[in-house]
Amino acid sequence: MKFATEAIHAGQLPDPATGATIVPIYQTSTFTQEEIGRHKGYEYSRTGNPTRAALETCLASLEEAAHGLTFATGSAATAAVLSVLRPGDHVVAMDDLYGGTYRYFERVCRPNQVSFTYVDGRKVSEIERALQSGTKLVWIESPTNPLLNLADIAAIAAVTRPRGILLAVDNTFATPFFQKPLALGADVVVHSTTKYIGGHSDVLGGAVLTGNRELYEKVKFYQNAAGAVSGPFDSWLTLRGVKTLAVRMRQHEQNALDLAQFLEPNRCVSRVRYPGLSGHPQHELARRQMTGFGGMVTFDLRGGRDQANIFFKALKVFSLAESLGGVESLACYPATMTHASIPTEDRRRRGITEGTIRLSVGIEDIDDLRADLDQALRASQT
Ligand SMILES: Cc1ncc(COP(=O)(O)O)c(C=O)c1O
Image 1 (cartoon, helix red, strand yellow):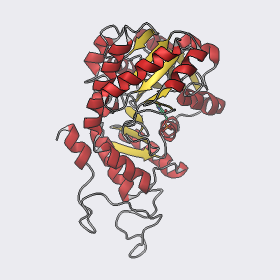
Image 2: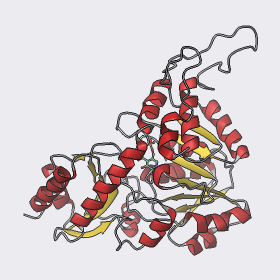
Image 3: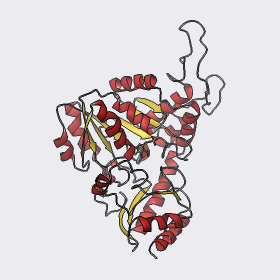
Image 4: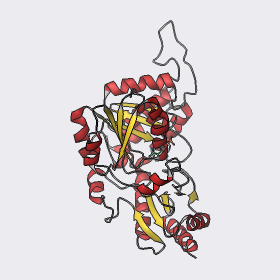
């Protein structure tokens, strides 16, 4: 079946116990057994819960993965993938990553003797050059947070696959509606379902999707052992959100393209980053590996932190807030918010300046969004 149908039906058959059309919230920690070792497939909700199972099946289906696992947050999903590494293992990661992922790599994994090399993931040759005999994992985001750079997933997979190195893709920004990393050759996809998949900024969650049985078994073992699972109500909210992913993503993209085109010639703005603009340096790659360009737009406001602050304070429809992917529009200041955990010099070198502003373009009426940006930009330069 097609994507929009799968999003509404995959893993979501009528409830076997009652016929409920919508998957119930199985808000229970435990399940009564008929006799020793005899039960209906569930024993304890950390190990497995029917609401979570429905979400795991649905997300696996959307990513064209054989297996899905969901977690309390996207960060917990990232940690679950990294849990398969052992002291002495090496990871090659993009140097333009969500700040919390970088923090987890540097402050949690590195002290546990896993080493990291960060490279410009736009260049496959740099990834290839950074591989070592102990490299077990290549970790990429595409498009990246917040600079909306792209990595050529198929070309990177062509380097990692023959060497038996796992390729993990954080597909949070694109979502499976616009990009299918496993079909492009990646081994595992990670999501912060807190973002577009949940879609309403009312729930945290994460997911790991893979076709690799051995990896799945390891991550599933870790999921149960470490226990950062998505709870029944959170799983249900995410499942409710994902049903409308297709319609939301189309509208996010339409609004984002409109605003990117509005910002590009604006005299208050020095640079606009959006993969859907023909001037984006990787626009051709975006057209090749994505079926749409997403709802995130990043731009550099002329001036620095003071101008940015005036801009944020003037906004009426957009909220100054962390996170992204909800139906409402958000504006964020990566230097002190999402990317504060990256050292200042590193951040500047990567292109995140004091004028960099990241927009999560919602699905409100585009006229209101454009007018809001227009008045806030004018205010920032007076
Ligand atoms: C691209 C990306 N990956 C992972 C995460 C972490 O997700 P969570 O906040 O659900 O732990 C985020 C959060 O902002 C993100 O933007």
